[in-house]
Image (cartoon, rainbow, N blue to C red):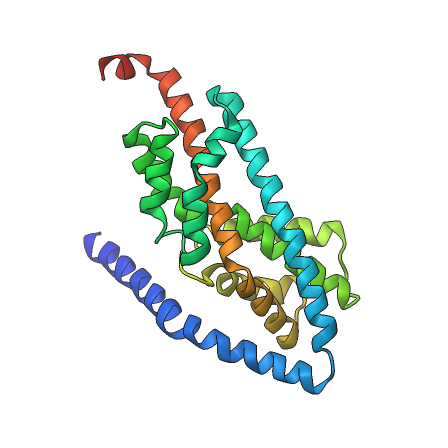
Length: 245
């Protein structure tokens, strides 16, 4: 049992190293090649215009998502949601720079505790959510895929995207918390379920990487809202523990 467990842990570390040190550093060259091809075909200006619109729309969607998360968390925890969201701002800004949920854990943890979450709960919830809560990344991937499908005249039916979102939600639990990890983990699903060819996959990767920090920032900030909810539920279920402390 221990041998198998150690093997799986080592294999996980190997995957992280391959993604972080091999695949991610090569992505700029891949994206550069895609744009060279688009330049030769005279499509750069149209694609860049579409990119700009998508980035603005996705940023607005992320803001709406975070406000909704903290309004729900504030209602459950009986805290001012906007004050709680403002407290998480350092984590948001850090994630914009690091583009990694794992690297932002110390800042996210500190700001979550400042929001009144007990340290033992925050220490459990924040590292866990850094791995499994990728709501911002999922929103960004779905929005990018939908926009590219629409621009290419492909099927954008609700039935297709409902199944895609469900599968993506499951897949994202296993996505590595490194820059570009979410899109690299999901590109196979995008190709198989949505029918993206190699050029469309390249556009997806380029568009995602261009605003990778926004998705990561939304993920880690949302972790603070989840921690507030868990802290309230735990406090109500075992008030004697809080009193003893």
